[in-house]
Length: 426
Image (cartoon, rainbow, N blue to C red; front, side, top):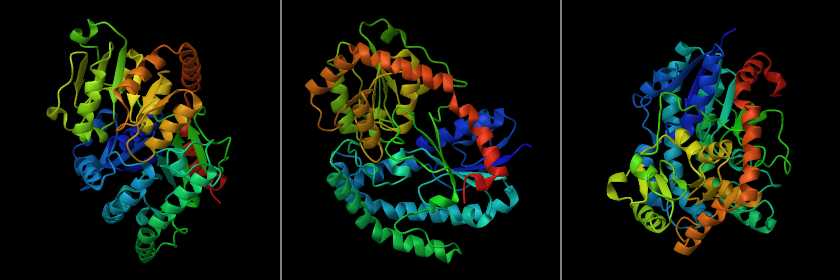
């Protein structure tokens, strides 16, 4: 029986694109997918056969990047320093949840979905109170998804083989900072008619079927197994539908290997650092395709580069020999899908964890986006381009992921969850 699946994602590329990939699979399997979105996303969603219910929500990247810059979250501070800086970001997410909740409560009775898929930061009481089965899609890393003393804390960038005393120090600071923002949020949730949230948690994990995209080769399940309401996929990679790309002739004619350089849709807002990195890469004998970001008009690429504000990543990755990335989840999982080595230069949040995990597992190198020297970055490029053993390991990972095609199983999982929720949730 076809299901009507309502998606409630944060309106940002890193959140909505994984939901599009899941929805596309559901539509292909005969279900209906409806997104809460705005007029910016409606045309793109329609191209995938996805319906929309318009809500008055801004894209989080519209003013979010500049706000993160002003707080110092995008910048050269360390992960532990950014925990303190992020306390000023809590008000934004509180208002976001309250605004989303008000609008969603008004439209849910008319939509009448069979299941809701949320990709949010904090809980939405209207979803809880609806009684509709809910899937929480995690477009951030598994350490952020679930805090467990057996692993490093999320957003720390600490190694799973590192000193647990450093884990404890970071985790305790997060708890101290969260205390002041959790209480008023929990009071609001209770005031909406919901049960209190678990201590210092902004959602109740036991209420949801959780799905996340993270390759087996990077995951932490060998350290901390997960409950039956957590299901791993290799990635939430979409398809490059309606997009064609060829290396521009002026770049194709130049010598050297081809490298993709992207710090995502938000981090390039720091133009000064982008200029610094571009100046270093200009000294490389290789060629670069650059995702320039929202301030693309404020800096210039070198002769061995081509770029644009936004580029079709999924069409570019099969063409390149190496990826230089901020360590965002989508870029990491998509690069592994195509078997590409990575230099990960994290800027904030779970990017630190992904970068360290790549480094620890031998699929790339972690460098500091703000402090790496010219010598370090240029040497890292040569090291990875000439590491044949890593290339072979990545090719094996790529073959496994592509053969497994785990996303094809998402419809069956959601169907089963709707029919038998107690199979996953007590």
